Amino acid sequence: MSYIPLTVSDLALAALLVLINGGLSLVLHLGLERQLAIATLRMIVQLFLVGLVLTKLFELVSPFWTGLAALAMVAFAGREILARQERRLSGPWAYGLGTGCMLVAAFLVTIFALTTPVNPEPWYHPRYALPLLGMILGNTMTGISLGLHTLTTSLVRDRAAVEARLTLGASRREAMLPVTRAALKSALMPIVNAMAATGLVALPGMMTGQILAGVEPAQAVKYQILIMFLIAGGTGLGATAAVLAGGMRLSDRRHRLRLDRLAAPKAGT
Amino acid sequence: MAALLSVRGVRRPALGPVSFKLRAGECLALKGPSGSGKSLLLRALADLDPNDGEVALAGRSREAMSAPQWRRKVTYLPAEPGWWAETVGAHFPDWPAAEALVLALGLPAEARDWPILRLSTGERQRLALARALLQKPRVLLLDEPTSGLDETMRDKVEALIDDHLAAGGAAIWATHDAAQARRMAKRALVMSLGQVTEQTL
Image (cartoon, rainbow over all chains, first blue to last red; front, side, top):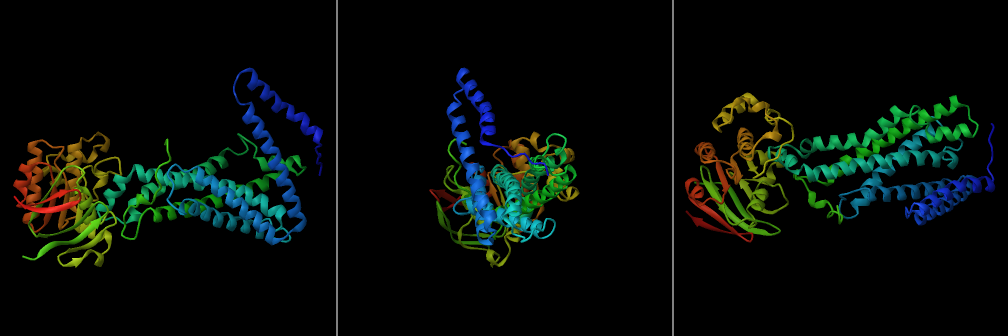
């Protein structure tokens, strides 16, 4: 392994590049310098904190603390799903549905990866569990966000079409099928595109990281392929669950479309 | 004669309670200014929105059957019907069976290949009526079905509904046209602020 450690002065040197951005903003009156400074500081503080937490977790190798960290990651990702919805479900469903589906899908796929292909000792070792969960979570989150977004906005837009089928005696499942399909397609397109473009357009971050850390490219590639499969699985599972559950929530047992279960649109949209 | 559709105490926010009976072969006009709740009532009868009250078809309560079954027998035709596919034909599971109705409504058989996007309001209304009649409902809930039609086409629609009534069906017809209400119905429900009163025409 040929791994080159970085010193603080190395980072300080590289930070000059961000300072150049700040100077550019001042000279060209972009008004970005304040935001840029805050974002840079946030990144530094957040990453150092994560570093500390991970260091501690790796020392402990405790199923309880690892699980807690995993739950915190899911909770943050859930907020992100919520923020990306133009039309939210009303009440606790808004946060609960997307987050719940993401939790189940990401945990199942991560546990599968930890117990079968990767199989560290012990299987919940945070050095493997947390990075794997993070990568699966990030993509599952995007899939669920897109799926729910398409589901709710299409049901509002195509309400007349869905209700036309209901009046002709279709069940809610049949009546919503075109919308359900569109929602699942939009959820799965990013991972399909990512798999098609990987290696040609961009070298994936994780593989690059492993190569920088001295792993043989052939091994890093295998890891990357595994990760893509895991991401595809998590996204498919989570988005399908979220879109189907969302469809159930937006209809009822008498096969009515229940758009009254959407919260009022956000102001300005 | 016993009631084909009996409605007792139907209510939902901004509507009712509404009670009335509709006999087989009868058409009931539904009158009232825009926003008085005509569509709310028709949607409630088709069970498209949550509502309370007893609604029964030929003595059988709507809760005794599944909602899709109920809507095949008590069919709502909205003023602006919805479409889920690109061409007209895709909305008819059995086009040959639909053709006679489509012709009777003054549209050519080639209408099957017409794209929905190019249809006029009147064409949409007539095709949606054909689509609804094909499932042989007992009660038709018509929400201003001739608002986009000229007199000739309007007469064709009225003749088809007359056939439906003569065959033992029933209809509730929301209309702003007093002459049409008198032609089609002997009784009217007049809506005002979600309440109904009965009127003999």
